[in-house]
Image (tube, rainbow, N blue to C red; front, side):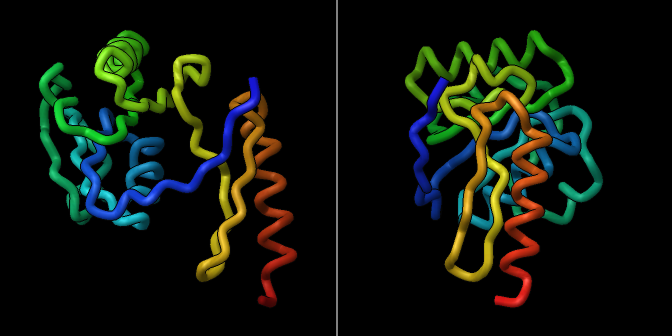
Length: 146
């Protein structure tokens, strides 16, 4: 599958992240860097979430949590929860990223390199994330001195 690459302006936009493990933490950091207003829903979370400027709902996901979100990310370690969140988002025409199932995603989050206003995004369409990371590292090396 070929995806259309796009950079989104998320400044001030409400984004929902379901799950608060390491994957959700990485995604949340990127969302905050982009200026999104992030709500995280999870009964368990990485301690780093306590220090982040997010609304942390310390409980299981509820269908109403999705209302008003511009984007949804689901990154729990429970397949059925991720699938359920994806179906709810799609039913409301809210783009969703499903961490454990690229075919269920409306969009993918690429590996990226950022140096000031320059951003380079690398994607394998979800087929080979390790390769994307390896290429990201090579690009970082090239841009090291810039």
